[in-house]
Image (cartoon, rainbow, N blue to C red; front, side):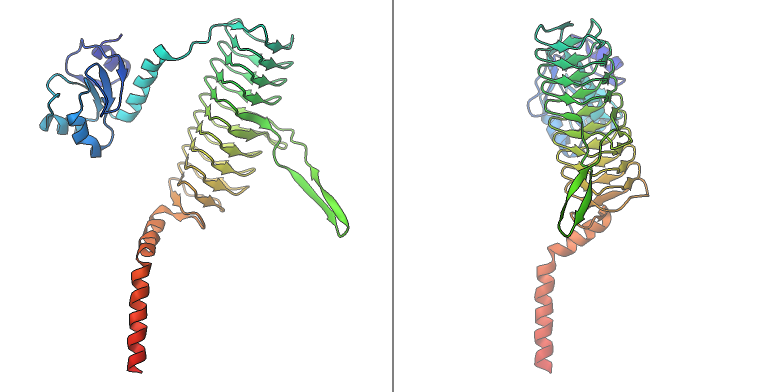
Length: 355
């Protein structure tokens, strides 16, 4: 196990306390023991951090100053990792400790896997039971494809990506390096494209062939049962570093920028373009053919029906959406509507008496 000073150097934190101490895991403030590390990223939990039995805390400089000025019973021997972003440092340390307990996927191909002879599967890959790999597929080094997943013809999956069980990746899709795709995800199914052809006596919805692909950049994570449709003629694109939660629907020709986060049950309609570094809350939904500026934040359950052109704005509201600051003002008025109603009734009653 690494010492405190080794952890501090690895994760670019300043160390306050005994450099030779060793810690075996991370834990929440209320459960952490003397051999564990916890973190403080919200000043509201300063007192809880002071009272914690954690042997080490990841903190900001301002939180360290508070804790040293208000020591708890266990503060004397505690180690502090001082970081500009304690939450991110915690996440990186958690990855480090998780590696020891995470499943390892040794290189090799399970005898039940069905792999087309034309597929390129390096010896460093792990191919699990009942996996199907189609013609022309190209896998990078150390790719892991777990049981019952299906990789259709001409797909490309780059180095160190992990495909969990029962994932379906349709033909000609491209997955970048170090991607994680969780169970039940479907990548590259047909987009929902139909042309109406109706008359007074009947008609039909004519299917539009979906001939584009899904292109997923490096370091993307896709949650369980999320669906990303292939493009109609151009590609559906997910930018590098983006993280997509469970049960998200991304329609055909959508373009998601780099380092976006999209929470569960969000739905993005066809041909909408989401900028870089956007934050989309759970069950938010977007109409089609919109353009959303960089660094836009959309609260959960919000409906976006128009393009957003100014970057860095925060939108909230079921319908219609509005600037977050405007929504807060309107919400405050809504809470007082009953009192306003009573005052209006009283005013009306007094006016009737005077007349």
